[in-house]
Image (cartoon, rainbow, N blue to C red):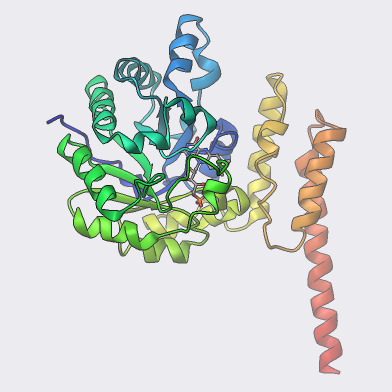
Length: 350
Ligand SMILES: Cc1cc2nc3c(=O)[nH]c(=O)nc-3n(C[C@H](O)[C@H](O)[C@H](O)COP(=O)(O)O)c2cc1C
């Protein structure tokens, strides 16, 4: 049996890998809000790494800022030799761990190359994970569904986990809904099959020695804390994009550390610094600004902020003061709403 390393302590709460979302700029933004949570890259296909390596273009796919750490690279693939090579490159690049994607129902899954379809081949998944672990001295984990197509009984899920566990795997991230590979799009596969957190709870009961992390529609830290009574870790996906400020309370509530910021407004000057660096290195500040639209989620001025940033990125993409102007705008909006509340309470007192 291979020697799999234990998960990092920060696996207690992580941000899910999301294609076109969890790029280095999104990760930097979330890292500003929580210094302790675990971050994941978007899925990177093993062949992409191999080609980029040959062509000397690895940076395009793998570069990150050390500030983002701890950071796990998520791999897609099903060929143990090319996963081995890719894992070695990822370790050399400085990633803190490697995760294998066995949950993504993308179109390329139809070719049988990676993702959720691999749940039908547990022995192959075990071989791939053993191969990755033999390439690196980093923790290696797997992210999968509770089932796929007709392979969706709890008995099958337990068999799948047992086979991986027998091979030495210790860390399982379980998206608590099955995937339908035929007939549902990837986005429908994140909504339509019912969420079954109870299945993940029972998986933990059946395998108490394994690190079982639950994933799927966790939208508040209250839910995350409840789940942590029943499983070892919680992974948050879309809520990190829709309501990133949620992460400002992760350090105090989950890791017992101080919160980096007291108010959303305090984050803006830090983001401004990042924008200035991007502009001065010839890059587009839109790369980070597109990720911060949800910062004022459910707050006064949320819409005004979102619209202003979107429009300004379009109209004046190189203007160095978009965030400073947005700060003025949002402060004015806060004041306007505070005045309205005060006036209405004065009227009701009269
Ligand atoms: C836009 C988007 C892209 C995603 N890309 C990936 C991916 O690259 N790898 C992966 O394992 N899961 C991917 N997922 C699935 C998420 O990691 C997560 O399992 C799913 O969204 C359920 O969690 P949530 O309800 O908290 O969002 C993606 C999800 C979204 C919304």
